[in-house]
Amino acid sequence: MPKNRLSHKVTSIPPSGIRRFFDIAATMKDVISLGIGEPDFVTPPHISQAGIDSILHGETHYTSNSGTLELRTALADKLFELYGVRYNPENEVLITVGVSEALQCAMLATLDPGDEVLVVEPCFVAYKPSVVMAGGTPVVVPTFVENDFEVTAQEIEKYITPRTKMIFIGYPNNPTGAVMTKKRLLEIAALAEKYDLLVMSDEIYDRLVYGIEHTNFASLPNMRERTILLGGFSKSYAMTGWRVGYVCANEEILAAIRKVHQYVIMSAPTMAQHAALQALRHGEQDVRDMVNEYDLRRQTILAGLNSIGLPTFEPRGAFYVFPDIRPTGLTSNEFSEKLLMQEHVAAVPGDAFGESGAGFVRMSYCNSMENLEEALERIERLVKRQR
Image 1 (tube, rainbow, N blue to C red):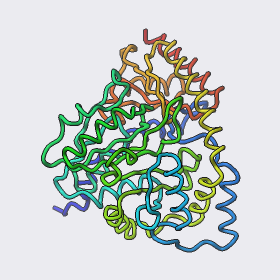
Image 2: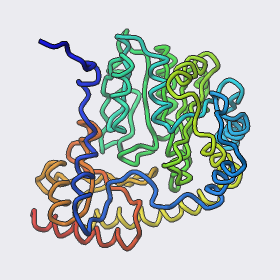
Image 3: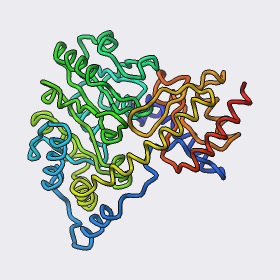
């Protein structure tokens, strides 16, 4: 018998539950996609031009492993301006190839075999696999629509064992659009202190909030030293294809993350870093304009789904709604498949983001108002047929 040539860690991880519906939709015509998790806006022209100019000026070489000092300094300044948390750009800020790389490098730098990570679910599809690939054990902490998918410290504490090393949260949340209140985050912070745990906080959607303020976890009392902060430029500045993210942490933790980054990546793309610097320095109005447009779409699709009879709690962040499709009698997969095949609307089954999402579907409102209104009409037709 030939030896097994593949890693058990990798083969044990299921493929992303998102891709199947995208692959089917790609073969069809007249599909309105509410499935993709990226802005439908193009990168603002002045940001793109900064990247183009860097190429034309011959700035095509490696940067420091950590990223350009200019970008790290501007990022540290922006985090202080927004949230009052101060990082030293010299040794506490690392520029990465998107948040995905930041996430994996941070896991590899902090986890040993047997370490448990409490992963709040529903969550982005990469969270649990990143723990597994780093040799750790993901332990799911469910959230519930009754709490607007906010996690509570009481729920987290149920899952803490002597092997627990980290709490992993992602708010504003993908897929639910939930945003944590500061009160609940403070309770989680107290729990992290009580049990001496690290907290990894994915805040890629931090600027996309509606009618409330985002609380940066590292800004909470005594949390800066035990928080690994993940963020990036993809969502707020419509820069998904530029692949620029970051991780901030205290000097000791960041040095370990940088070591992994050095061997895996070397440095983030130089021209993309120049574009990101332009975004930080001159992109604030772009962010506000996009947030205002998202908010109009959010209100439209939220009201539409509720009127159709799919109960949908109000998401206060990101650009997703997470309607409850159980009144149709269908599972998340059945609903998503019928919606795509019969009505040519693409959405993502809620349980693609973990079992806590079963009975729900994720719909992105990164689409034109015209398409959203047409999609709502198609969804209503499906719901009426099911009833």
